[in-house]
Image (cartoon, one colour):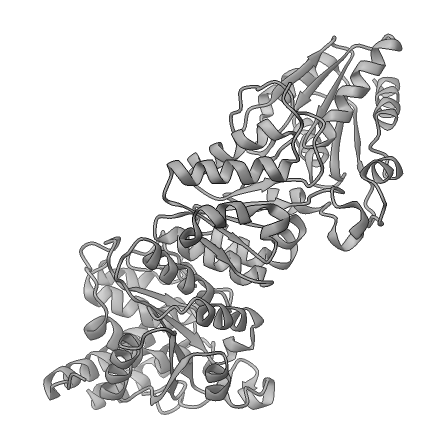
Length: 278
Length: 313
């Protein structure tokens, strides 16, 4: 296993913290959006885009690029912040999130937003699409990997488990799922709304290689992604324990910050906190 | 005239042919490969065939993912399963991103008679037609099925291809097939327009022949593409005949009858009668013909509709 230099790790940590500020400002300006899950997902998405995935920001449609499917599409501010930073589109587009005529829709649109590999938004569909992409790579003897991020509430959806069964059946080892396991969904905790039970055990029983990690620990995320890539004969899932609203104290671990407007006052408070941490 | 083949056989043979010339074609099925005969493709090209099991939602998603990599997926399951169970997947993962997926809805209409209402697809055209970016084709015969498969593969974007199980009575001469283009079948005269789609076309033609004995000269037009529909051809014919009857093995709501009603509401003031399933769940039947009769799709029903529409003219 490659070890990651302190420099790489710090660079991603710093980047993720900067991106959190973009996420807050973007959602505040839009007047609606989903800050909680965007903040829980951003460390993982940063690890994928700044280190792990093979991508060409100047050539978004590059055939051999690794693919990322944000199945929990409502957390697209996290993805948009990364794509803008990498130059897939100009940063000023972030100001137009959720506005009429914008490249940045309320949920990801692969045709409107350069760098978005799949249109998502209606929950539960991304893993099936990711599996199709992975099989498409195999059929055409291409080497790219496919990464699908799922929300923990999202795995209430039955289609996720259809895809889980199929991915193991097809031995899709070029497919890696990442569960953003922040424990909260719109109406409350997972246990209040729909108990997930032994999540790791379920994925193992479906035939997946399961890696349990802290989804805010950059070296742990990077190592797990690499381990997933080295697994053959079955798909892998990173069960990443995260904190909803991570990085902004008044949003952390609060289900009401799943989808909520951010006031100007809250925005400046959040940005101040994030600034201190950077 | 070639021996009439079941539409599913024509479909499966076309896929095998297509797979030979176009390596980008992949096929998915949902544990119905033997019903649909996609097993023939699987046998020839096992590396390009995926049986998704009894999990249509996942199959539609897989097809979408395959399409993003430049492949041309043909996915098959029963028509009602695409249009009902997997509808959100069809909408969100295929139509909205305009992915190049071809959905072949098998056993449509009443073409699987004994299985009853749960397995009859009588709302699929209405549902599919309402989805932006979707092209909707409903075939009437085996030769046309071959043409439609080829045309669907050449067309860039989502296609719903409505197939049937029954042996089709119309292994007729090869007509030109173009997506979105109406086909003229019999032009006995301008008394009435009978516009039909899918298997119901055969009875529409029979009715037109029988009407000659009553001194009524009909023109039969086939609309195999419900979307984009050949508006001009329908409007021209309606203006000429000033009386229109639509015929389809589908609910009278939202399918061909619905589409023609929409057109006529913005066009010439022409009376319209819709022959189809009258907003009811259907029931099992031993034979296809028994159901056609029970649900009012027989030539005699079409003739009655013609008589009604002519009175209203």
